[in-house]
Length: 195
Image 1 (cartoon, helix red, strand yellow):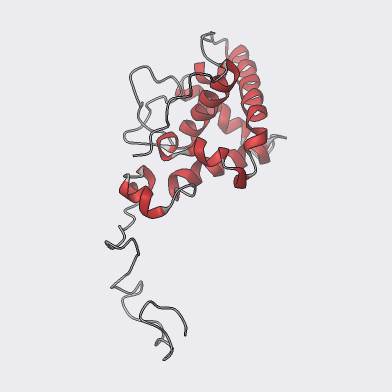
Image 2: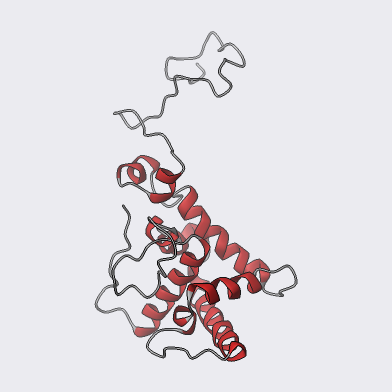
């Protein structure tokens, strides 16, 4: 299973705060179980691995995703919203972790619901971040599928995604509709490629 590696020892407090804030957001979108008893980012609201274990942060940090440069801003904004929300709800925050991480899972969920509501002016940004968290769980888009399956990727396993053949390729002996929809072109090769 893809468990996030510990942050390098030279990681700044700001980078650590960014990471656990984004992990807490990902865990709110697709909850999972705590990675350890001291895990503060993952609330432990569901059994099995959620978006964090599926690699949401790895996907968000991929250069091709286009979000990496803005992740510190997402974390800063999310923590500002969490502090405002906590003040409105008269909640005491634990100052040893970022404000969003300090919220209970129920309060995290309510804040994310508000941020993704149709009327919220920042809705497109938060929905985008949520979509990437879902994508990490649903598809393991940041990993080669065969490797993700070999590692027991929690989302692919939960969906019952079939394992590849021993050569790493997927072949399906049954047709989706229980019958072929068309005959193969006579020049189609054994691998299914057109000649």
